[in-house]
Image 1 (cartoon, rainbow, N blue to C red):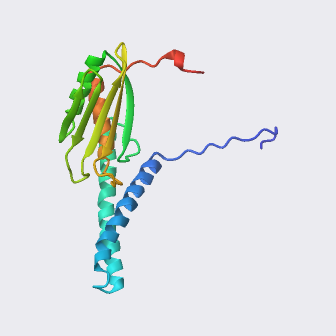
Image 2 (image 1 turned 120 degrees about the horizontal axis):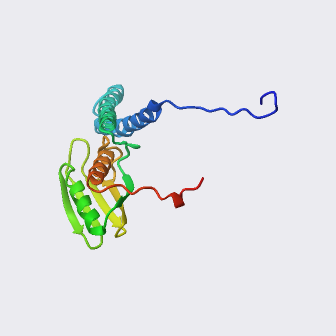
Image 3 (image 1 turned 90 degrees about the horizontal axis):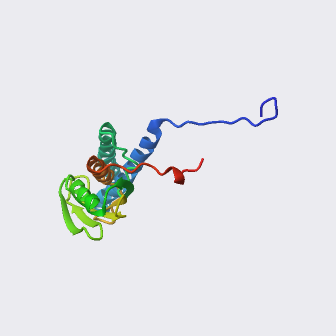
Length: 204
């Protein structure tokens, strides 16, 4: 408390890199541990235990380091392109409200999806505003299932995009999911304008 008896307010500011560092460490351990174990377990009983453990630690560290570097590199690239990488988790969701009719927004969403690499649209229903797609395998992931759902039919419409790894056991994808969502939203907003916030919904 200060001399007037009033409690002092303490503000703690975290450095910008702290969140990114935490995400990078998470990627490292999420990939290093299972990969190291997968390399070591089949060799138990065939080689001396210290050798097996050491090999597992080295191989896991190398693989985890490569995946963490990939995720960090992807985050930096997205930031450089003006895209918020978010938390870099494999499962990503985002909603954006835009101006336009269901038909207009659906076509813009379809074109935005087609800008993603190795993508194939498997469902396209302009009447209900539904789009389903999947991406192919890359060195960062086993591919993703992407869904787009559009609600509203002018003057505004809400577009929700969701991406999930095609392999359910995926723990990290090197930022591929965050990249897909970020690039989709950027391409979408180049075709249809984002709706202005409604002041009636904002409370002081």
